[in-house]
Length: 611
Image (tube, rainbow, N blue to C red; front, side, top):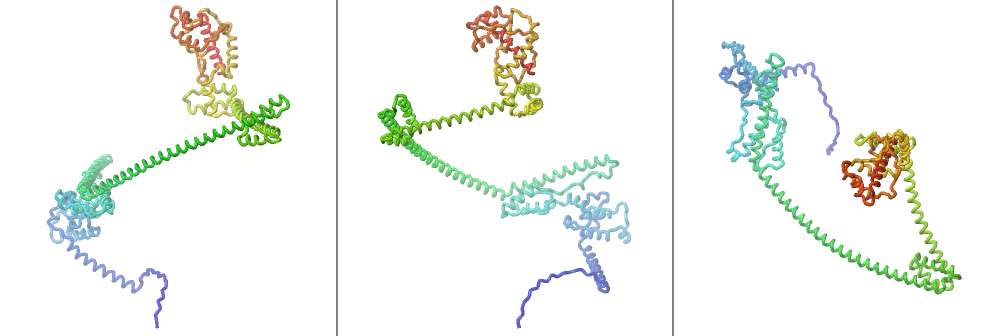
């Protein structure tokens, strides 16, 4: 009879059941017996483990409790910072059972209540029994060894000595996982990790236990604040010294670590190998580049040679084609001439002569060859007339194509001019000049502001953009005012102003022009954009006479230079000026200067009228 194994997936559930009745009484009795046994064993351990010499305790001064070794007072000198909270409670309980004043008094010992050493035991438990105060005391543990390995230890016992030193200082780390110092066989990753950790070491060690003053003893808030400030400054100073000590320890280990030297040598060799490999690659690339350049030059030379051959072939073919074309044209002219141009009268003969030239200019070589073959037949005249009709149609088609292209170009320029004229009417140009004067250079978003100003005050429906304003302003600035569309309107306005003030004009026979006026009035262009805010002179005389001979540009330049050279105080000024301008008399120079002054005054009046 065989057995069969069956796997059943049952889910087992557990739950807690409270004991009642006899089971509850039995469990209570069992727990009491266990506690009694633990208490007896604990008392035995207290007596055996935590022993303190009574003479040491009697030598303690309760007033100097802060300077005592609290671990030694409680009998935890061997465990020290490794002692658990349970160890501290057990040790204190033992000390209370043995050295409490009531216990000793019952044994007949005399007790000095004010100077009894039991106060030191109590203070030791107060310090070590609380995590915060114990941490503060552990930071200044008097038994902690802050020393570094000696030079003898570094040379003969490097790894064990530094392992021990770093293990001791690892107790101050805020991070729990402290990497080990290792030995000579440690991997580079572990060594780098170790030194990175210690160079970025963060210590929890603090020095509040060494505070010289207790801020709670301050009489008022200001004194307590001052005490806290002094204590804080002392703690920061000690903390800084501690971090410098840790850094010095790490530097000492790093500078004497043979592993670091080995790693540096390996890295140096690796860099040299990489550099050598890189140089080899660069040399190979250079050689490859030179080879490619040579091949490219060779290919280029071959290509140029082949290109020259192709060009020569094309030239030969073209020459042959031209030669054949000239031959066919000559044959056509000769055949038509032999047939008297297929004409019945002189007029038709002249027309067909022109037709032969049209055919020669428009027909290709193949077409000319076919035509020459057809002319040899009996229907020669019909073939010639048909060819003439085809040539005229080709010429007509070419002319139509050229005319269409020109018409399109003209239409585009007309549309652009019409659009520009629609935007910049005389009214809008006047608004532009006014806005440029109202919003000078340096205004924030100047051209946007000017465009908005024109759009607000214009009477038309067309709106201008800042780009249109900027382009028009540049065009006006670079244009000649004498050729502007505003010239007629400005001159008319200025002439009306002149007529109103004509009665007040006083005409004098002596005219003197200063240096600055002679230069300014001789210029041909007026800057409409920048404008001028000066008022035009009211007493202006309209020019009544002009020189019979127009002044050239060279004569104008010579006149302006002479006006600058000879000032008003120069004797015989106008005679000397006339001598500087060839073919001009003193009277011509006076008349020209007078005309220029009047012209500039008229333009200033026009600008004010536009404003």
